[in-house]
Length: 456
Image: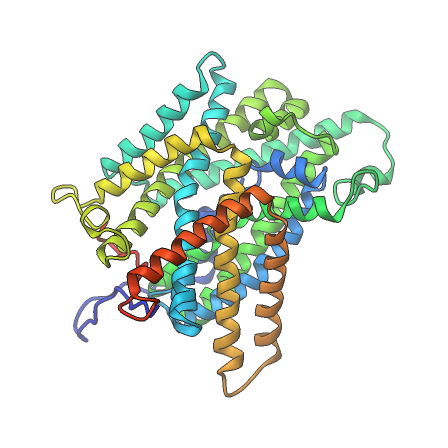
């Protein structure tokens, strides 16, 4: 799939975006996108699957993401404006494989608002326990849809303020954990090592099951490449920023879950409480004040994520519809007054609402990660082909990084649950059949997944 850039060719006199972002400003933007409290919402699911080894799962996932971030950064040099996983794979390997990577990303985009709807509903029940889950799911799916239909988008300053507020909450949490541990009294050195390795509960299968979910912590780092036209020295800084954001996210996330496990230990969470696991840890460390502070913080973070994810999914579907990859009349339509893809926003909202009753939070996260892993493996493969197979000068790093990244991502992908792999596999099969029929075996015409900038 040869995906063309959406940017129109500009004349020499046409104004362009100002290159004003420094490396560290780009890193801050990346951390805002990923969120400083990224592991808190999924903490309970990872803990139950990894049998208490959340820290180790986060760190193993970080290794895979660092190699993948390196590949993303390298490929952003080649495709600075059209960059995305399907573009890289479609141009470097084969159009059909690029199409399938794009199809996997559709699953990823569609499930993100659904997952946010589920966790927001569960967290709100901690504040309003008398309100039925069904009513809250309908309220949040409706809220995301209504606000996006009104074209209400949070500004960069609001996002930065929210990220700063989250960092303050993280510091408060650490302070309460220190006070809690100080009050325990005597404990041996093994106590501080158990979050990394507890021989009583450790298993490689559990660790990799947990890691397959822990990758959600890093989702969003690839968004850094969208700032290619606004950053100083993009060939250098996009790569560095992408890797640095992954590393900083991994270290901060590991510290957060390490502190949580010192308080909670390796104990599992009741299945009905996995979405509220981190607030429960906070309650043990700091009482109901800290419980509600963490619960509210995670709730607000996911409201923002849900709105942004729904709009991003609607824009992706619009790009597909505009290029006739899916029915153009419905998905390629734009509201002439508000200039937004109204049909797609409502469609994604309906899926989020229906899915909130059909999928658990854990299963939704795993399916989301199914699509993400397909994209990550594809980007590593594309980087390997471009920088090692086709390059005149071959460097060992261009062999080692993408091969290790793809291999580790594949091994983690294998540890997704069987239902997630079956459902994801059926989705990919449907995409394969649809794409083959649409293009006459991927020969006639092209199916693109571009997200038009500024049109939605």
